[in-house]
Image (tube, rainbow, N blue to C red; front, side, top):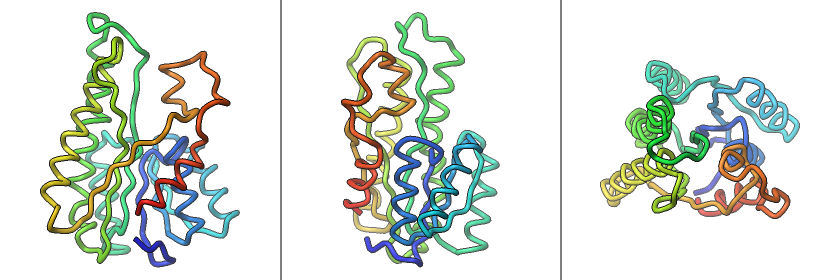
Length: 218
């Protein structure tokens, strides 16, 4: 995929970590970035960085579990640009590790709402916009934690999301949009810190490095 000044890129989870780094990398290459995240301060920091790099962005403070908000966003995108050329879905939620009997209903529901249901809703609502592009491409972040103790809520929700993405990838094999997955190396993100609060973060791969690697697969 050729990233140009005409590229409209939607990035979720854009206020920090891989989402932030990917949004900035795409903006540096000329794309107009629609940056989605719950954290307004993080989005404003991203906007400052993008402007400093000579790029442009539209900020969307939004929790991806708010379906009406997602619908309004996609309608606004259609009315302004008529399409999305690239979707990079980085938004994810993790609860602290816990034995399965100790996972609260609230925590399990939140993981499923963001990671599994949120992924399906992003697909459903952006599919028409991606199909309207000549190069419509969607990228989803893999994080396989199945079969590990204490990861019950997070692993179940990410596995469910992966099944949805894999099905969509098969369904669009001969039709647009192009569906890709990306498995980043361990990064010093806030999400990972919930699982490994005491690890040496300096030994991990910077999100900026993985963002460049992600953009290279497009």
